[in-house]
Length: 336
Image 1 (cartoon, one colour):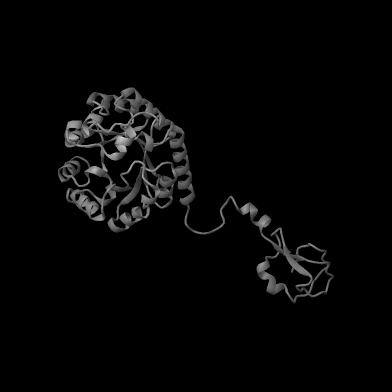
Image 2 (cartoon, one colour):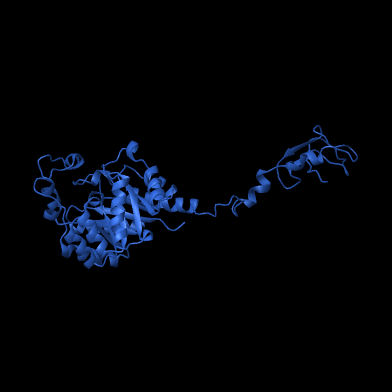
């Protein structure tokens, strides 16, 4: 299989602090991910002053009176800080990535040099946004939290009409709850999406822990996105549903091992590593008792024991009834 693309989602876990954002880049580099992803938005273009926070945002920020706009203003990075982050990522030899949440930010990410656009779950029903994204980028990743199959199909049609090929689209199964209950993961939906639309699929994870993204890779997902943070106890709406540095490392390590485990030929045959154990683990036909020349082999005087460097027990019926051509001591391999 091709290498699984692992996107470490820093998101807004920098809390609007460019220095914290750089620390998150460092963590992503150390974990060995392919991309470190942020979120690009202009707060006033993203939400109105009347937009309330989601229940998980209220719980995680411990502030029921703050509006979504007020919260996002504190999490926004300026254009100049984006340029600074891109340069920092280049210096650290890791790919910078971001999700745009409004039209202006889509254009800005293109100006930053991004060739791939990530459609966040909340924008999958935003036709003007989808059309703008399709006009700017030729490779697309679509998150599908809160989506039905019909909504996914309608979004895909926008990109197909813009001339984007199926092979340039990856759809990420996703659940937009932070954290996602295990009972709501519905990981088989990833395979349904793949079967129905014939596109590459992956998984954007908001569960606690690392089990589900690992399972998604084992099921055939080729892209994994996971939130991470410096410390889950930091303030912010997404911190609690994010991995801490050691957890991110463990996830990457596990995914790379799963890649190796499922990346074989698919043909069942002895592997190089186990060939040395064939004679040790298998059995041969041996003398159960001392046998003298001319004695007939029977269930009373032969049996099967390790090692497996003699006649295979699969030839048992062939040996039974034959005459010994020499003397055998107990446990000697039968020769015939």
